[in-house]
Amino acid sequence: MPRPFVVREEDCPLEGWDTAGRGEVRWRTLLSGDRTPTEAMTMGVAEVLETTLHLHRHAHPETYHVLSGAGALQIDGVDYPLSAGTTAFIPGDAWHGAYRVGDEVLKLLYVFATDSFDDVHYEFG
Image (cartoon, rainbow, N blue to C red):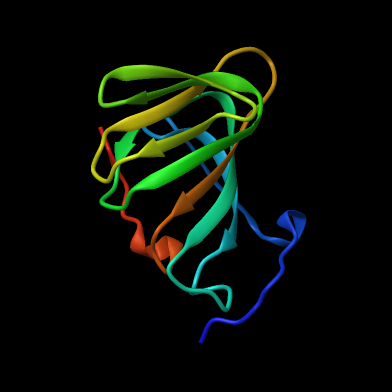
């Protein structure tokens, strides 16, 4: 049963990928029904560390809100510029990936309309 809940980013475990096919990305899951008393929404903060989060897709729509850094988001072959304060909507099953520009880490708030991060099944191109 969902209930009011408050979480601090730094209190969430650090997870990530560092592989040639996925990119060097780390994240902290803030809301996920398997970890928090929440439902219908999964949210976290991701950082693109080196240059790229490789093209991937998943059935669930997703939003990104850029917290810091700069770069671009490619969605189904179209590039969109990213900078702090930018929000993007990514339809379900759309091929997408992000890359950073400059030395600052590209930090994104991400949201999925699903109960748990475990519901999101990634397919990399």
